[in-house]
Amino acid sequence: MREQDFEPANYVGQVDEGKVTYRSPSNIALVKYWGKKEHQIPANPSISFTLESCATTTTVSFTKLKSKAKDYSFELSFEGKPKEDFKPKIEVFFNRIEPYLPFLKEYHFIIETSNSFPHSSGIASSASGMSALALCLMHLEMELQPDLTIEYFNQKASFLARLGSGSACRSIEGPLVQWGKHETVGSTDLFGIRYPYKVHPVFQEYHDTILLVDKGQKQVSSTVGHDLMHNHPFAEQRFAQAHENLTKLRTVFENGDVETFIQIVESEALTLHAMMMTSLPYFILMKSNTLEIINTIWAFRKKTGTPVCFTLDAGANVHVLFPKAEKEKVDRFIADELVVFCENGQYICDSVGYGAKKLIDKNE
Ligand code: DP6
Image (cartoon, rainbow, N blue to C red; front, side, top):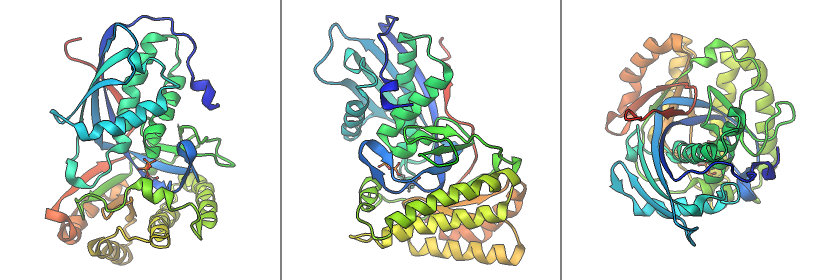
């Protein structure tokens, strides 16, 4: 596929108005995307678990304008209230995707969005938010061009979501999605694909409990962080390592090799933060409680042999990953030993999910 393949042919349908709702999940990267080129092309391939509970629900109502407008015409609300400060981000997104959705200036859009997780949780909502919006817009394209295949629909939704936020392209399907060109997995830089090889049942039911260590605004945005990988002294080695880790994961996923999985996933999380600590300017997003949690997980794993591990996003929160069979034991461990390190004792229990869903309007 090339970018031009997502430029539509002349639409055959005529749509005056309509409404659609999508619920799109968040995802947690196992091999991290950190560093990008122009047009949201990742510097290295990445893979993530799609989540189930952490999600954004977006409703888009659209009405055809009498004539094509000069600017985008849209209203935006978040959790029932108008949200002016999100608008510039949506404008940038619309600008990037307009070559692929040429109808954008022909409609007025009412975008209503809400998250299943608390807004101030420090959980990035851009992946679930951008993917939900991309799916709603693809629904309109599908009405204008009803012969689109499901495969094309999903690929283009992921392609558009990527232009909003890189990691968003991994939120359309599940349970494992790979994004970025890789020598053996036939993945592409343009959109995320459902992992095409055998995945052992243990990884199809993995759990992720997100410990909210610091619910505040991030000091450094992902976009700034990605930028710091340009001229980073360790960038080339890091990008090569991501490729190698993805190659290793193929047998890990196939065989259900949880031990090697833990090693790769924890190393990826620490490497991500090591890249932040060794860029110029350098920064640290982990908090002291992040380290307390990591050490407590390591001690528990050593003492009990329970295959529980952690990963981190570009923030202080800790994702605790473990097989479903360990849930009871790990839940008790979290309640007894880790909750003390969470802000206001808050954490979110999630597990691997199977991707975004269109919600049916009860009045339809
Ligand atoms: C650390 O997708 O948020 O979560 O493309 O600039 O929107 P933009 O960045 P974003 O970066 C996510 C970085 C990460 C790792 C990952 O999800 O792979």
